Amino acid sequence: MMKWMARHWMLAAIVVCALAGAARADDFVNPKANIPPKAAPTRRNGGEGTAPLPLPATPLRRTEKMREPSPPGLVGAITFTPAQLKGTGSAASNWQTTIIDIEKWVDFTNSDLGQKYRYVQTDFTHFSWDPTELPIIYLTGWTAMPKFDDATIAHLRQYLLDGGTFVVHSNCGRPEFNDSFRQQINRVFPDRELAAIPTDHPIFSSFYPITSMKVRKDKDPFKEIPPYLETINIGTRAAVIFSPIDLSCGWDANANPIVGGILYDQADALKLGANIVTYCLAEYQYGRFFDHTKVYHQASDQTRDQLVIGQIVHNGDWDPTPHGLPNLLKSIDQNTTLHVQFKRVEVDPDKTDIFAFPVLYMCGQRDFRFTDTARKRLREYCDHGGTLLVDDAVGSSEFDVAFRREIALIYPDKSLKTLAADHPLYNFLYDVRHADLAPLGQQLLPQLHSPRLEVIEQDGLLPVIYSPLSMSAGWEQLPRAYDKGYADADAVKLGVNVLMYVVSH
Image 1 (tube, rainbow, N blue to C red):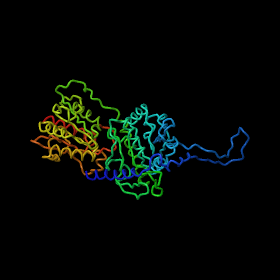
Image 2 (image 1 turned 90 degrees about the vertical axis):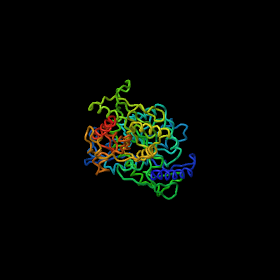
Image 3 (image 1 turned 135 degrees about the vertical axis):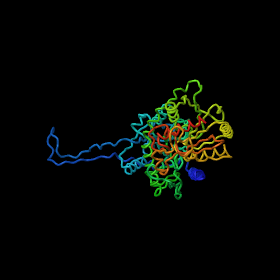
Image 4 (image 1 turned 30 degrees about the horizontal axis):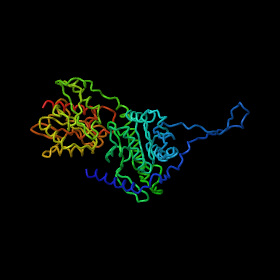
């Protein structure tokens, strides 16, 4: 927790200092904007022969341009039309020529990944909004962005929900751009938070292991800070990836500092850029599958004697695995004698009658906080026979720290303990005393071959059950690259055992 707070305070101090000394937007001259794009590659082909013959004969020897075969498009670099930029104080040429970073980023990534992708320039008026055509769209700028119209907002939201990724990079780390981007993306996703990710997020280890980055303000010496990005998540995938600091892939801030700017070191920026592409490609299939929503087909039925789950709504990305619970309930319905009603009720512990539910399910992947009222009511609920089942959706350190803090405030007189390996829960319906992890979990925890649940015990009961390794990601059964939890089949078996044990005791 202290490392997490220190990271944010360090970054905040650097950014505040940078922006406090930045020149006014009207006075700022961006030297990166004056560099034209590279010429399109051409190839010449020569052949031996005789002197040209009279037409219509074809010469046997001539030299001419040949079209280079185009590699597949990966990134669409967004530009704006003059009409879109009207009234923003920025010329269309500015947006169209600040592409030295993406040129270098794509070239470097292709070289390191052994791939051959290309970027193309497009704008929101001509883009197809199809992630299968361009999985990533990229935007950079240093002046205020134009306001998106309602159609663009709707198209961009659907593109991201369909599996596309929006990578946004603040040219020179300018506050005018950062503020305007935050406003526009909040219009796209008013229901989702743009927030910093922890340093153990897979973006920072997907290709290069990145634990620190060098950053420079004006002509000041470089400083080392933890890597910093902000994201908006759709499910467990970072669908919007935003750097408020200049990812100076095409600009050497060491040799050419920019007064009024704040930039990452070029070598560090290139590595982070390669990581971002690797992450986006690895999560592409998950993003495409995610939008095929599971339906609680009994959600409108009147509640009778069936098991109905209350899912806690909180301010820490409360529903990152929405397909998981219906899959689990369906498995219980098909493989046990427990008649399950396919219904999830969203529960606000500050207001809702939480005592109406035998089980409260809670999931998340970001920091969150309960109010004092919610903590008091959850303690009363658990003390009167209810069960709080909590799952860390991606094994996130951020959610883990938050939950441990909150449960310590709910139960100051008790502490979480590891559930004994011989506890009957692990053999209640399925024998899950041995459980496999998903590939990333196996890589991080090669010695772990059994479930790891933590509980609070009270009078022989388990009022709180917490899984720091994700079960719900496995319940979803989606092609997820960065699951730190249990393999799909064992995740379902463990989840069935947990719910069956809870409702039977």
